[in-house]
Image 1 (tube, rainbow, N blue to C red):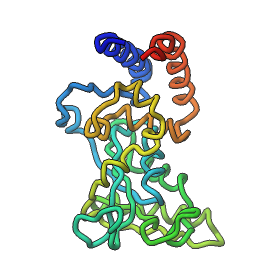
Image 2 (tube, helix red, strand yellow):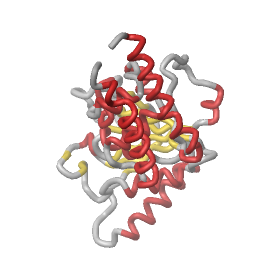
Image 3 (cartoon, one colour):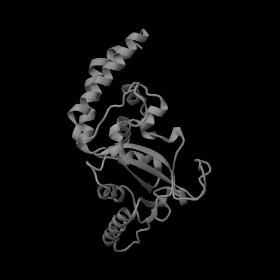
Image 4 (cartoon, rainbow, N blue to C red):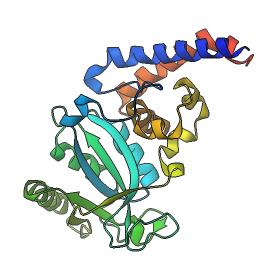
Length: 249
């Protein structure tokens, strides 16, 4: 197929996915413009940042990606003293996820609920088969109000766990270090077809894409049923209309 024909198909797929955004603005699904300036736009000035550690950052990033009001997610490292940690040299950091969210849509309190419901806070230094200091459970806070909310939520979680001790730490956020590109949107990258639907964005744009955050959660099967069903329906529609052409590429 000629390059112009391929571009036309990609534009068609992007427009089809845009229909999800238009129909679900209340759900926070957005389409990243592959040719837009990657710098923050004016609306980003209203966003806030939260950081959590709850086991492997591959799954943690996907957990928050499909949450209504979450705009972007980034896998990374936090909670330690080592400067510029790397995956093979973490030092005392924990694998973490940075969540950029719209406080007009979702509160820090609601993000805490997602945090508690998405991992086992009673497991010491690990999650499931992943055992080690890098997989410990931490809530990072910005200021006294977030620290208070985190402490209250931990107390409630402990009341629900009458036998085992909740091991989650609460720390003031000092620094967050983004992980290497290969660790960003890990679940989405295991689904090349979804990447193609987005127009195969460059790595830096994929990391910043709001839609990529949603589809990363979708790829990990962590989206709420309503959002998952709507994305399923739109993808099926795209496949029915475009696949006879795409398979000739």
